[in-house]
Amino acid sequence: MASDLRLPTDKIVRPDKDRFLNEENPFEAMMSRFDRAAELLDLEPGLYKVLRHSEKEITISVPVLMDNGEVEVFTGYRVLYNTSRGPAKGGIRFDLNVTLDEVKALAAWMTWKCAVVNLPFGGSKGGVICDPLKMSVSELERLTRRYTAGIINTLGPDSDVPAPDVNTNERVMAWVMDTYSMHMRHTVTAVVTGKPVEMGGSLGRREATGRGVMFVTREALRHLGIAMNGATVAVQGFGNVGSIAADLLSKQGCKIVAISDRTGGYYNKGGIDIPKAIEYVRQHRSLEGFKGGDNITNDDLLVLPVDVLVPAALENVITSKNAGKVQAKIIAEGANGPTTAGADNILDEKGIFVIPDILANAGGVTVSYFEWVQDRGGYFWSEETVNNRLEEIMTRSFTDVLGLSKQHKVNMRTAAYMLSISRVATVHRLRGIYA
Image 1: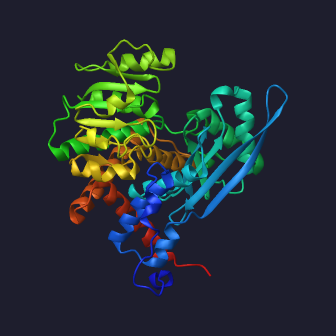
Image 2: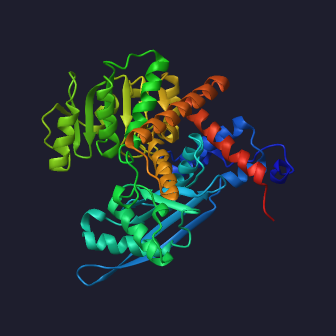
Image 3: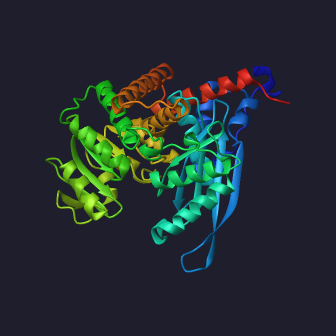
């Protein structure tokens, strides 16, 4: 009940705002937006305290026998942020830049992301500090299996369901599923999503995040009265999300004038041949040397005069330092956390319509939910069914957020946080506190 979550005070006591001066700290950036939404929702102080803390943070040592016979010890994390609405859901990343603050922020983002599209999941995230590009397939498999064993008590279809993330893929999820299944003594397909179709993966999962970006971009263009046919688009990041979003937007009539990856960018005022670019990356593993446009930097791509900017690469690429130069009418955040909290007000003042990450890139977790449902039911859907159901959820969620944005006269990011936090808070009020 709500009374169980109230404290004997009329005001929420929040951390000093100076705490958020470091706009590149992902957890602080997430919490500053959380605070804004909580204030507008007039969230009870007790519930505010509950929702701004993660439920469980796990740090483990991951010893791995390397191919040269030596043992290396890696550090792994798994954070379950909130499971009030259902099992925790969140990816596993292998990267040298993994930190606990980053994993906590991503777990919180997953909580709000699942809630904003109304999935019966909570949020989690995991990661291992390593350089997967310098590891053999055998070393990566041993790393994955030992990390899985280290967090196995939290995993399960009813408790915590991982998925691929940065530098992990279907094969890594197959190793996670197999390791968990060996410990359970039977095959458990629903313990992970984003796995191979042959092992219970869902059709349409690989394209889902990029397809979701396309759906919400289409809705934003309609809302602003911009014709999709001929709308200009710049995409930063040409990995799975960026390349698929670019391909699907081009098929809807948009003109993709700029693309980039870690090696640099390419601009073509007449439009880039996206299938040709995708094939080039398939053969060369990056865009380096691509002849489909003039060379530009990743920084230059962000400030091109386009209708739509899709940051689908790294966190913190639009900051208070460059937000004033952004000329796009719409920003569709394909990546997690591409815009810092310090940049939000600047983009607002410029009248740029931002589709926040917790909505724009929720297509991936939505189809992960479909995969989990199919695994648990033992009945699998056609790709057409998956895509149609994804479109229904993404368009409905966009409409829900837009409606709240208009009602409270706030931007789309604040509205998305308000919607998701209110849904999580409602469940906490109904459940009360176990004592």
